[in-house]
Image 1: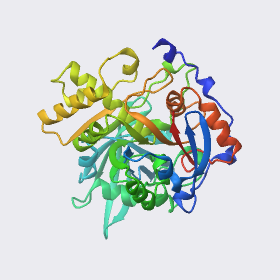
Image 2: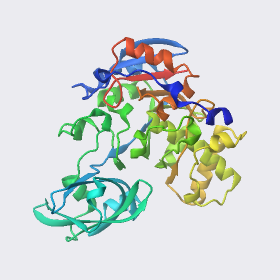
Image 3: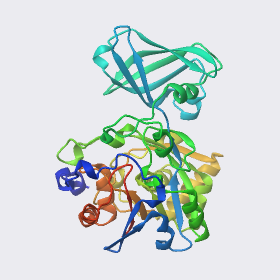
Image 4: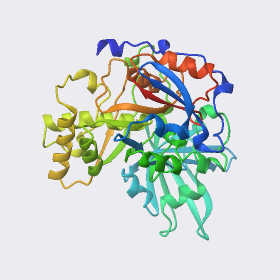
Length: 405
């Protein structure tokens, strides 16, 4: 573990010119370029050809989270503009329940122009469903760089989901350096997004079209979904020289019992679409290990800590870990497992479930680049040099890669 903790983030730097960052997606999602890294060899194609590079009988797992319109703008009587960026629900702390709330909801938020909002309640009159409501925001306790914000409104027929849908703005990544446009509401969602909760898209999934999904099924690829709600921490830069000093953000995951059964039917192996699916799947192994160590553990205590993979050296097999989860869910009559993960995946990590990965090209000195490096046995530079030299587009709206180590 010490070797991993002492990884120097400067060793994961590369030069990314601004003109290589895709500011907008291509008009047709699956016309994007696809880099294929297979056993150290690199080639390229287009994303619509993805099924040609996969073996029949594999299991592919997607993250079906849906990006919420999490940015709310209020203007004070003084004229100051205050931005409230909803990060995660507090009261109630279940996403689905919070979105269904009427008249009151509380969220952990980042606040823009905080110095102009020292006290008092913010107000905004908005039109929803032919009704005029007044939305109020009151700032409460501070939690590090975030704040508890109470939202109240004067209409029991309007839910918080309704408010975000009408008043909220989609939070596109900061490195795009542009305002959100109406088109982003469609293009910054995957075609299979279902479960509201993310403040950033699982961007590897943005390349999929229904035609590609149909062709995968025809190829004999099993398709399954998990849910990980992507937090703003996904953009959090590593500011410490060594990754030991970087605190990973917590993200909330939900996995259906049928997905555990499907994984077991595929010997605990999967193709992961995106780093969020990777983090969810790899966390499952350690959740199973935790259950084996304590069969009576509360579901809330199944959280995977940042350094757990490096502090434990379990000899549990992947199928044993997955069977432990399945038994736990059966004992507790759970159709879905709801927990959270803070896992960091970096060189020194041994992958348990993910055998192939589809992912975009990530920012220099990011934890996502560490995750990729761990997967390709530290051969990330050859992949990124190829992409830079062959006109691949980078980051959220950019091109993608299929990694087969």
